[in-house]
Image (cartoon, rainbow, N blue to C red; front, side, top):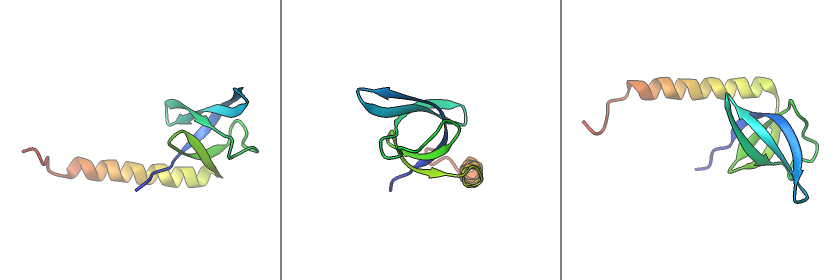
Length: 84
């Protein structure tokens, strides 16, 4: 299973002729390639998978996704430790 994670584009630049940028994933800043999203702009949100921007998404969709991640985290905290 693959997981694309939404993040906010905070910087765009070019490296060796490729459109690159910095993405904020709720405080974790990572670099991503935006060659597949030539129209992406700073302040936009994108789905990133293994360092590549795959699609642009709106802020409302990002909030829904982050809420699901919080629910998963909350649920996992309630599971028994399999090592015990």
